[in-house]
Length: 120
Image (cartoon, rainbow, N blue to C red; front, side, top):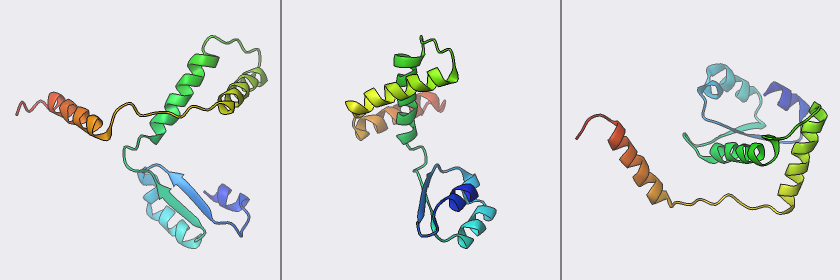
């Protein structure tokens, strides 16, 4: 956080989106934040699914562009990734949820019952 804070012009506010890891909530971090009031932390919900979509995107990148590719250098690999990103961004398609929240919650509840071992 110090690196980001120092590299950002003083007149700008910093809004950082972080996961809910406890390291961001430790006393040393809380003290640092008090001394740097322009830094604002925004935590994702516990067990949030946004990171799953990021992981899904990297999986797609790997499957569609990198898995069977041959790259003779780091630069060639980087160029392949940048080319894929440019083509993907030229005609973007949003990720679409295929289940409603109620369907997901029902599925989770059923899973919990199956795996709880309580047999109630």
